[in-house]
Amino acid sequence: MIAGAASPLAAQFEMPDVKQMSGIPRPVTDLPDRAISVRLIRGDLSNNITGFPVDLRAGSTVRTVKTDDAGRAQFTDLPAGATVKAMAVVDGERLESQEFPVPERGGVRLLLVATDKTGNAAASAAPVAGQVAMSGQSRIIVEPGEEAVRLFYLLDIVNKARAPVNPAAPFVFDMPANAVGTSVLEGSSPRTSVSGARVTVEGPFAPGRTMVQVACEVPDGAGSLELTQKFPADLEQLAVVVKKVGDARLTSPQIPNQQDMTAQGETFIAATGGPVAAGRPIVLDLDDLPHHSAAPRWIALAIAIAILGAGAWTATRRDDRSAQAAERKRLVARRGKLFADLVRLETDHRQGRGDAAHYAARREQLVTALEHIYGALDSDEGPSIGDPAFIQA
Image 1 (cartoon, rainbow, N blue to C red):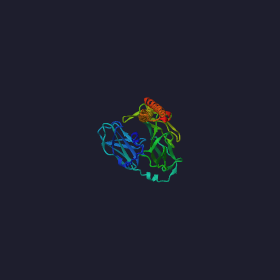
Image 2 (image 1 turned 45 degrees about the vertical axis):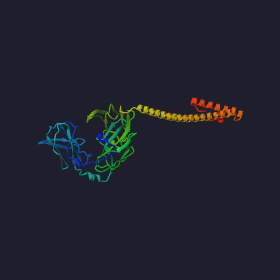
Image 3 (image 1 turned 120 degrees about the vertical axis):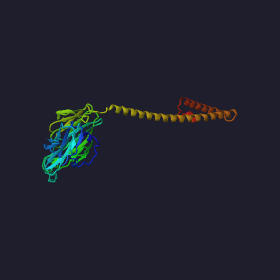
Image 4 (image 1 turned 90 degrees about the vertical axis):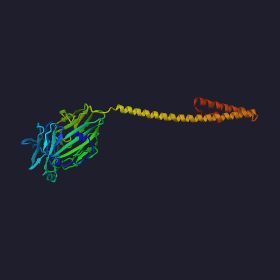
């Protein structure tokens, strides 16, 4: 169940006709060696036939086992290699499996499907007011991840009346707080719909069982999580399965019994409690969940900010250097012009051209301006544009 639910939640696949699967043996590894499990249903997978005899024939030997609450009859300690066939007679209809050998390792599961001769007539009857409940076959499955906890509800809603039932209150419930990605899974009743984190199952409910399977994710960033859930119908028995990742732990005042179990090489916490009344909250506390520390995230953010700051500072410094280089170039050009003016002034003075008073004043201006330029070039700081020496020069 967990492996199937962990696939993309929105994926929907067309269910095969269960009649086509009837009687076909399927080797599995989750049964004891040389064991055979026969599931007996009427019409569809939600309608188990319980307390009904199933025969397993091996040559002239016949063993009979009655089906349990899940509609399964299990035969164990069979002789390896023996050719067997499963049989049952339901409402006069003879159901038989293919013949197959008993495996030496692992077991075999198969399905025997009886025709539902009354379901269509009952389902077409006029709906009546009544109640539905969730059977003990309902499950809450929790699969912890590093960033979020995946949550699966496999709800078996039972209508024990002979006619369709409309409950007094709509069958509507909200997934736990902070739930995201709520989706309807394959195998659910087509009357099941999701809006945000709200799940709605429209009535009326046909006689027998209605399967509702939904899933969501609840973010987990601290290694612990409290899940609270209310259902709109009575739950006959609380059953929770938690995939044990690392040291994950489950506690709840409503779960007195739990134990670790292994299936297909993975460990699960299987927990059971008593009945839960409609509207009563189910509280599950999960601790020691796998999670990423927030420290690396904050460190990475600080480093990113530092890099951005260094980049901005470098860009600013680059602009400053470009401006300084342009200013130095301008000062060098200005120095050359002032030198040329000073040389021309001295030449004119030696050749007797110009006024002596004008010569002295102009020479002082040029020398003073050159002193400022040399000072600026020596310190790599350009003089102010409003410097009187430049204005005069």
